[in-house]
Image (cartoon, rainbow, N blue to C red; front, side, top):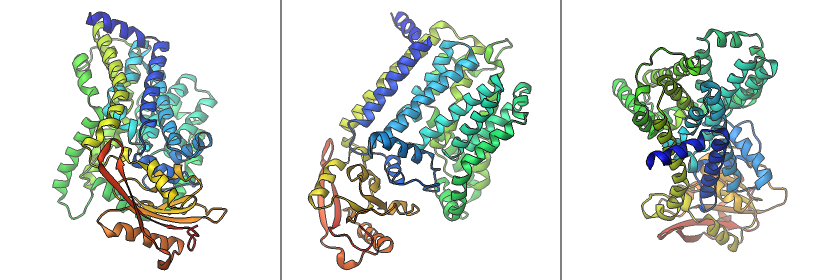
Amino acid sequence: MIDALTDRMGRIVATPRGFYIFVGLYIGAVFLARAVPFPGSSDDTAELLLHSQYFAWGYELKNPPLMSWLVIAAQQLFGVSLLSVEAVKFALLLLAYLFLYRAAREILKDDRLAALAALSPVALYSVAWILAWKYSHSVLVLTMCVVTFYALLRLEKRGDLASYVIFGVITGLGLIAKYNYLLFVIALIVAMMTEPGLRARLGDRRILLSLAIALAIALPPLAWFIAHSGELQGLIDYKFQISPEKDRLGAAGLGLISVAKAYLDFLMPLIFLLALFFWRAFTPLRAGAVPSDRWRPVLGISLLLMTAVILIGVLAFGASRFQFRYLYVFILFPIYFFARVQGIGAGERALNRFGAVLMLLGAIVPLLLLAKFWFEPLWCRKCPLHIPYPAFAEDIRRAGFERGTIVSHFSRYKNGGILRPFFPDARIVDLKLLDLADPPPNVDAGQCLLIWDDVDDPSVREGVIALAGRRFDVEAKALTPMQTIARPMVNGPKRIIRLGFIVIPGGAGKCR
């Protein structure tokens, strides 16, 4: 019975039509489960809502601006809303699966193996679960890596001028998607140079056109980055826990452990499923011609090169922390592995059962998101997706604020960007993102709202007041009365969230 069921499920994804239908249903279901029930958002989403108040060549040092630009474009369709960010994220994720499949078909020349390779991210906790509700820029870089690889496949196959132009455009966009994209594209190109036929394509003088196009696209954001790079060292030290006071040997040990953990976090549980169903693919391959022979070494070398650079960087700079979210550039690993599966000639039963597991996991993810909505407040510490921002927005309106300038600091939860969908005519500045330029002032005079988490630490309130005075010339005498609103967490009625705020109906200084 199990074999009959898995055989049927295996046949579903063995054809392009079956694959496209399944992926479309999967992404659609996860999108709805994430976008509809939750009233709150992740930090990434709230930050993007802040960034997308205006167009700029750069917004923050830690991420390039492309994702913010895409959200600005999406707001033309969906308005200023959480939906605008989630629509961009899941459209990108859908593109990643589709182009991963197309690339796998080019490499493997086998629809079933290509489908299993392209669906394998469903078994990556870091992709199927974390990207469903948390990160945004990581979705973008993952997609750009897949699309870049497909552009290189097109370039190798056709070798026409259009292919070089497309590769330049995609590479330029990748460079302003996320900084670790540079590691991916350099490693992939270096690996391709080891194969004579691929080396000829990359050695063609038209590759200079690709480079020129990529640089033209990336240059304005790069210039912004250089102009604002004064805080870069501090950011790097913080993210990777680099300190000259630490023992270098001890830091190296912690760094290596952190890298190993990051790789495991990124690859689980897929790596265990692959070992279960295709353990022979982990062993040396026997000689034998299969369609993927040409590209398998290239992909393997690129993965090894990225790993070597990461290890050298961690050891050379004494980084003691490395997080799995930096590893989304390894998204081509499933294609490489199924090239090895093709090399061992895996049996029909193993392929069908692995496909059935992937389909089952795909069905579980949206159900887990719904379970997260209903039950997470029973045990979570912060629960950012469950904060009742719609209710808080109504309380703020009743207190007299409709439009103008919002100065905010949500110390435990979100930055003020999460309020923007409820006050689309307001400009918002948040204490957590001081490196952002001020949004353009309102055309018509508005009101001023100062808002913060009402916690025991008075520095939260004082930080907002100081920011209002420093950036918008709000005088102390205007800062009355201070008010408090309280609401229970959605699906967590025993957890009360309190916000403190000041509404200045006529505005104050430049806070209008």
